[in-house]
Figure 1 (cartoon, rainbow, N blue to C red):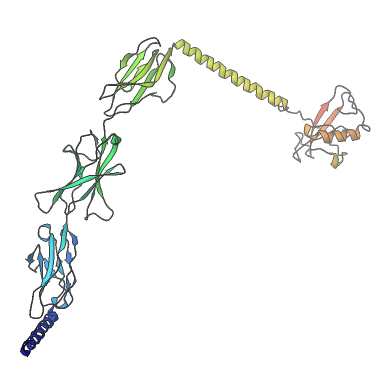
Figure 2: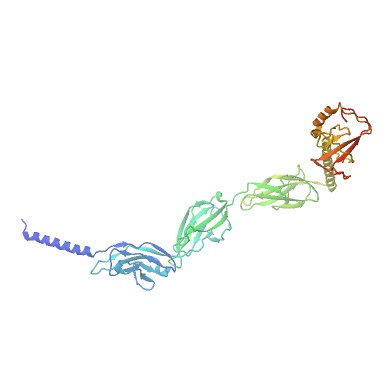
Length: 466
């Protein structure tokens, strides 16, 4: 059986341990707000936060594990008694301020020492505009650059902190690339190079290759970029020839003094060479005429065809269009103009004769002006039997006056033909004329404003009508 004093000793040691632990916990503090990564433009003011959960008697800051003296450019935002040891950095400088920062408090009789986590403080330097290099030769923005399948293409961004994020885009399609960082004279700034890792192929033959740069210093949703228009060599496959005046007719009949213009286009890169061949008839051989893309010449009778010559393979591709130029003499041209004029005149005469015949059939031509003669007004015709143009004799016999009034006149004639006397040779018939219901003043200044026209019959008229 163990002695009793050994158990009592164990109890005393446990009590002492608990007392020490209680004292230690009473003096232990923690960090409520840890420093976080912060970015600020060069020459501007930035702040790193560090807040303890209770007051502390002192606090300090370190950059890259080297203590920083609190002074002019480095100031505490509040008093340590509040537990807030946040640091304000004014006029931020890349050389002195960019790095990893941490805050802490030293051990005292009141509390134990503690150190925060590290946070990155970045001084932003806006990079220069990116540029593209092809086979280590810098290219101008928007320039046309011929490539082959082994060309080495690099996008370069310089003087940025941190380095710019670079990416490739072919027209609207993203391309894979590999970014490599290189040291510069300033150890804080890295040169970024973006290599294209995709294989160049024929589908790129005429495309817009862009290098896009993203950086924290740019305003929101802003991207900087540069681009080149690339051309991949490919063979000539089609040729198209056309007249300079825009007509699609390949047969041209012209005067020998006329100037002819012919143009030609073809695909392929590099640009193919051009030649125009000609021959005098279908049985002749093609002969070289001009080694130009577009030609102009005084017309002569011959056939013309464009030939495109591939710059890489020297293969010749002929156009489907063959222009047949036929010249005519000046006298023939004049005869053609005269004949055309005669045809035009004949057509106009036919149109004129047709118009006159149409008017004649409609009784609208020739136009006759009636002869007016003063007569007297007979008021014995009842109002309901008067026409717009009242035509009557001294015996008040109504007569026909126009096709529009035929039915009404026929009715009046039938009603009076058995009671009215026949007209005698030489007897005058008077016609009272009204114009749209308003009597026209007679040339003889008749007071009642009525005009008369007289008709003299050389032969006797029957009762059935005039």
